[in-house]
Length: 366
Image (cartoon, rainbow, N blue to C red):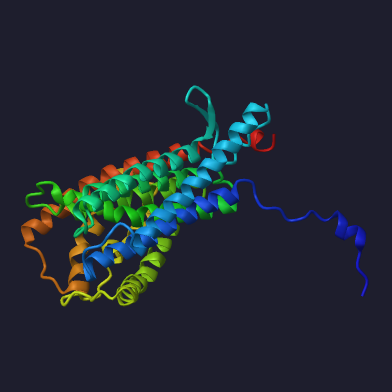
C-alpha cells in the first residue's frame, strides 16, 4: 500500500476552533455548579442542616471558581494583546470593552461571567461568616444563599453570551443550547424566592417557573438562525432532569453514609431540583417552534398556560398531592398566561440582542 505523502502534507491539520476551549471551561464550571446545587437541595431535604464545607457546597464553589478563573485568564490575555497593539479576536467572547478606564480590555461575554464569579466570592465570604455565626443551615434560601444563586446565574448568562458570539459555528450552536439549558434548570431554584411574596390566590412559584422557562426557551429559539433552538434547549433540560432524578437521591445517601449522618425518618428520596423543572418543557418548546410565525406574546401565553396548568398534575404524579382548589388553579393559569406573554416578548428581544454579539464576517476573517 502506498501513501501519497504530498497529498498528506498538503491536507490541512485539524485545529481547535477559536474560543472553544475557554468557552467550554466556563460552561463546564456552570454545569459543576448545577450539580452541586441539585445535590445541596437534596441534602437539605433528606438529611437536613449543613455546614460551609460540605461536598455539595464545594461543587458549587469549585464550579464558580473554574468559570471565574477562565474568564479572568481571557480578560488578561485580551488586555495584554491590546497593550501590544495586537488584533483582538472578536470570536473569543465578543468585542472587547474597556474596564476601569480601559485599564483592562474584556470581551463582553467573559466580563459578565467574571462579574458573576466575583460576586460569588463576596457572597461566599458572607456565607462562611453566616455559618460561623449560626452554625448549621436548615434551609436552602438563607440570605447568603440567595446571593450565591443570583451570582451563579449571572455567570450562566455570561456563558450564553460567550457561545452566542459563535452562533454561526457548530460548536457555538451546541454551546448556546447547553448554556441556556443550564441557566433554565438553575433558575427553577431562584424562583423559590417568590414564596416570600403575598401571592394570594395565585401560586407565585408556578408562575415564576413558567416565566423563566418561556423566556429562556424563546431566547434559545431566536438567538440561532435555524429553527429548533427552543426544542434543543428543552431536550437538554429534559436530559439533565433525567440524570439528576437518579443522581440527587443517590449522591445524598452515599454522602450521608460516608459522614455518618442518618437520613430523615420522613425522607422520601424524591428528587428536589429535578421535580422543580416542569416536565412539560418539551411540549412548550414544540409550541414555541410551531407558533413562531405568530406574535411572540401569543406563543408565550400558550407556554405559560401549559406550564401552570400541568404543574399540579406533575405534583400529583410525583408527590401524590391533592389537586388545588379550582379558584386558585384557574387564577394561577390566567396569571401564568399573562406572564408567559411577557416572557415570550422579552425572550425574543433577548435572543435578537444576543445575535448582535456575533462579529461581522469581515471581522471574523480579519
